[in-house]
Image (tube, rainbow, N blue to C red; front, side, top):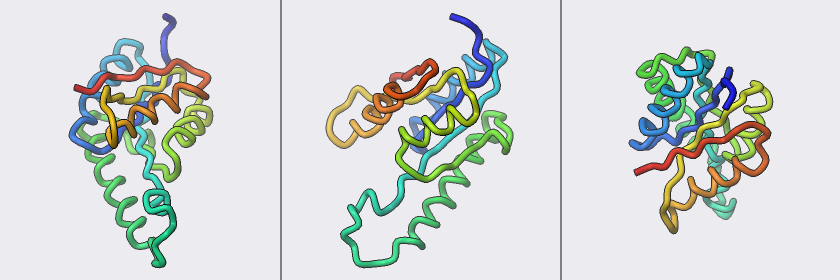
Length: 143
């Protein structure tokens, strides 16, 4: 395994994020790599299939604001500077692919559940990231 220069860690903003962040910190420290902290907010329309005859802009803005606040809190806690924190809106795997390319990262770290049903969501994101990323991908098993 060569050394990693730039590591992208994609987290959801649940209580499980620290498990993924701790592993990312460990790896980036060991390699002296720069850490890019990423959270992708899914557009509200996706969750509701666009069936709701209402303006979701306000809800989306609230979600974006909350995501920025939480990511900033994690950034402060883990010593990741503001310019290395990214909140993006879109499909998680597509956004992670785009950001990995754009920032020329050589390792992407995501969390993965060994669960079924609704919790499969993050697992499928981890899987989606794996297929289509040109660099190494590390899926951290979430307990």
